[in-house]
Image (cartoon, rainbow, N blue to C red):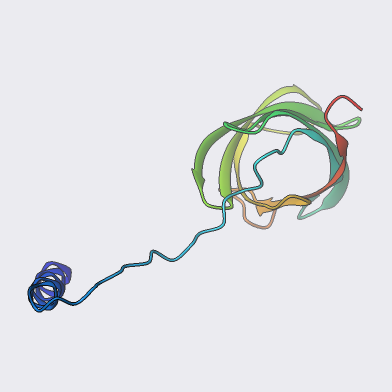
Length: 136
């Protein structure tokens, strides 16, 4: 069906051009994740049975790279594995853990916040806000 619709639109555009009309197409804008995410972020990781403080240091924006620490619980390296506009998927490779596991987070990112669920257990969330520039 989509192919037939595209053909009809293409034929209509060709006819309009033949008559001297000016045609412009505008793609809807999809806001990208903030361009410079480097710096310090803090907030919480919310699990079904507990809430833990979390501290993230972003060392690279594209692709996203960083280290997240939940004091007394675990630490993980974040590595971007996909991006579409403000949505960024990161793989969290747990390096030190009392009770964490490696996972993928589906994040929504702005210049001031990083939020999103665990891809496997959506009742687990990360919520972070920017607390300082990189190196401060």
